[in-house]
Length: 264
Image (cartoon, rainbow, N blue to C red):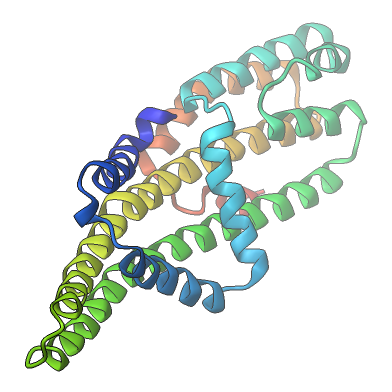
């Protein structure tokens, strides 16, 4: 996952290195104005629940093990073959070894012999909540990415005002501080907005789309079993999970989880 954030890590490393090696590139007041102002406006613009969802999504980028759609489709096909041979007992033996939390919950519902209607309702609610949270998190990051350059420009205007006020005076230190504020706030805003927040938002969007595709395939799989389709029908779908995964991946993110539910 570190490779996914190479640009962000390099940008932060450059900022820290600049503060240590070139102290003239580090100004606490400029950083507080740019970053603090952007974070404050973001905080008052969204609810605490939405902000907590963003923190969870960012944390998941670093902590959750990610698998490709193809690998997930292969796993579903493997479980389908196991179910045909051993039934629910075979899935129950595999439940504790499943790495994907959503797949593990789905298998748990099958093991508990819940009805199709109950499983459908739970999946619909969970998929809708997840899609809404991902959209909210991405929107927050996009907002923050716009606010950082904006507050950098605000800092520049404030620095220019201070510079003009002290221009005719004898306070050389005041002129230096004003000029530093005017230049560094723009630098901080452009750097944080375009080299840190923007890549993070893009990566979050890509992983959210991939996660929703995998959940869509999983939900389709569990509903197929819950409906009690024949072994022959399940075997045919088991071979099609890989192709379904490729097709969904090519289509990208298009409300896939909700689309499959509406077709049931």
